[in-house]
Length: 304
Image (cartoon, rainbow, N blue to C red; front, side):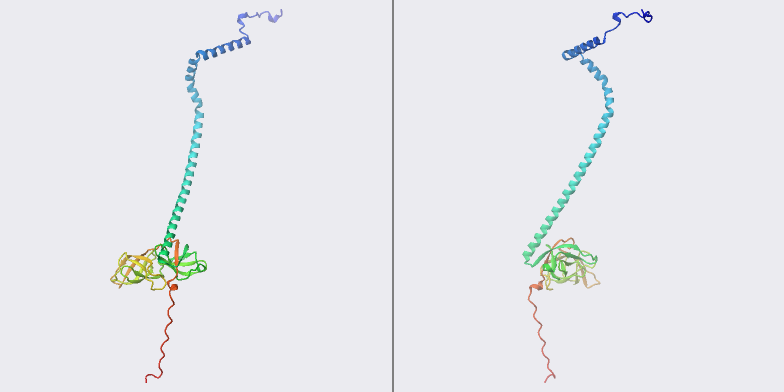
């Protein structure tokens, strides 16, 4: 017997424990029995319930950072989506507003054009349509530029009106464009007739720069009332008679002057006019004036 084994006695059989294959077999059988018992009688259900109650706080604590990160991500994503939807809604609203405004403008222009055509047919005027391109650069005058000229039959001196009344007069005609001087221009004058009593006068553009015209050289005791309608008289041979010009808006009778200051509001749209009608001058449709008579010959030598 070797010397190293003299003090080592073999272990008893029952103190050596189960072998590894036996323990594996035992665990397998136990697991199978537990599964069978749980499936058939639910013997592990109380154990699972107790464990779920005990481990729930731990589980929630472990999931808290993940849940916080998920909610934060959802918040920022939702905010971005809401901002994009709000921006898209604002852009859509702007587009719809622009389309609605454009439709309203087209409807208004259509109504004005229809009114122009109806007035031309009703009064039997020889007129041509024109459109305002822009306003003249001179700040001290009231002039507009039209998109029609001599090539389209326009000529200097032609009256211009809209669907309501007289707007002004063509003062310069070029081949492709024309210059329209409004009745509110300080240098413009137009003969008018008071419809109520037949009183004639001449209306000038207001020199104060307002959008009104002034009926000048009317006596302080003249029969003029606020609200009187003034129309073209036609005695100048340029403007056809009976076209609306303005209404009397203000009358100032001053004791130190023999003339009253009478301000009138134009009936036509002098500010913001877009479509107008250019009328042929009244003189173009009238016969020529007769030639002046030759002077009588004078006798030489006096009486006999």
